[in-house]
Length: 139
Image (cartoon, rainbow, N blue to C red):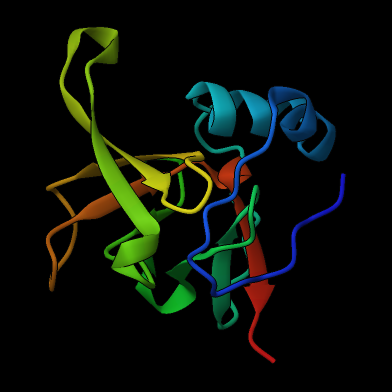
């Protein structure tokens, strides 16, 4: 499984289901391409050093370490995206509730959900599947 290079382009990335399966682990495919969710507390090994979190599918920069916080939920949480244009939103009505799903705008990868119970200054909690992210330390 090759990790895509980091990119700042906004050009849309489209691949076939077979191409995504070849690129991603089984869990990353289930989460990002089939809107799954990983188990809580399975990605507590993210570094604390400065850096950015990129889409595991296309390499788009999604979140900055400086915006990460411990929400206690068991999933990486951020109070804002690194670039709001790279993280899109849609309505998710699964599990008999209405939530706001977040996805990568370059490749449509499902990332997780955003909730209005985060810290200031935004009051938002982007609750993200760790398997959807690739951490890259600052140079």
